[in-house]
Image 1 (cartoon, rainbow, N blue to C red):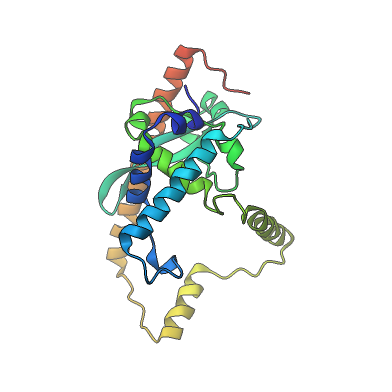
Image 2: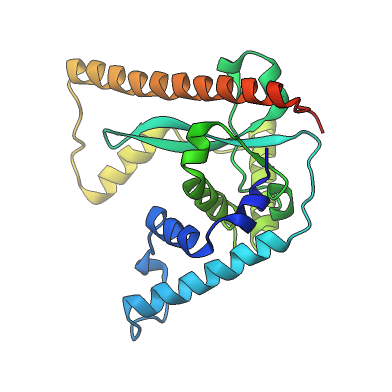
Length: 235
């Protein structure tokens, strides 16, 4: 099994960046001072920046974490169509109940740590390796290509957790947030009837069970592959 950094070094870079731009299209509302540039010029500029970022990630000295982590793909339903999504799992969790294995995001990990994470060699993950690599690039640059905003966001997260734990956080119920927004906009909220809501909840529950079933299935495939390879779960 190889690390994500090894894949970034081996994959076709142009295809990888094109996959990234397909999965994460340019948001022109966030691009400043670009009114006098064509869409092609902007796309080429972003593509060059992404290619340089891939090179940066590929050249980093990876920093292994205490426990080995593995990226996996599994199926879920998006916009009424089946799709795949990606998450990171702790390898040692494969030794327990697979239906209870938690997935983790990587936005708050240092890029050098991310480069040490492995990629599942299960067929589904390998089929979508370019999409997975694009996902990693997106998440690894969530706070900037050089993670320039990471420390500030970590401080905000730490402060938020402390406020919740000591009871000083001002929490607003989800329903109240939208009630205030509707009132501010002068909009009468559209509410489901009781029978519609009941069916809606069944749809959501079915989607969740579908995704959890797929994730557990992929973890089982991965576990069997790793045991055949003699993979050591812990660092």
